[in-house]
Length: 115
Image 1 (cartoon, one colour):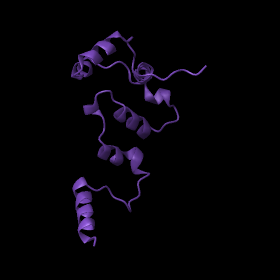
Image 2 (image 1 turned 30 degrees about the horizontal axis):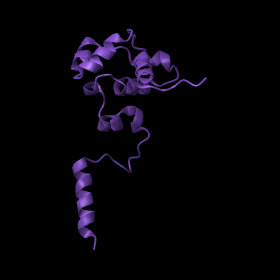
Image 3 (image 1 turned 60 degrees about the vertical axis):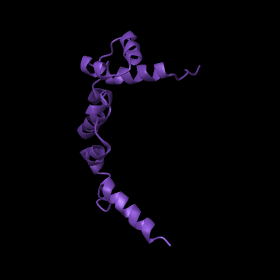
Image 4 (image 1 turned 90 degrees about the horizontal axis):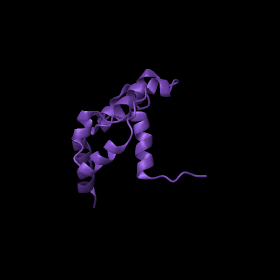
């Protein structure tokens, strides 16, 4: 029988890997309702990604650890992800990272040159 996917199931699956938030992470949650919900869930110990994915490279384990952090302020930014050694091998040097300002200027120059 197929299991119904609910928010509760999703959060339980996530916490089974990332572990229950620390007290610091818990008190950063603004919503009292969310904190009450998390408090009612059983404690989950964080899984070791190297053990969970034994064939993953150390760089891949580091990448997963830093992108799957519960606290969003501790997660890698998009730019940091793209610069991470796990992804740097897949990025072509023909397409260097560019700032948002560069992209906006390119878009503006393109728009201004249209008839």
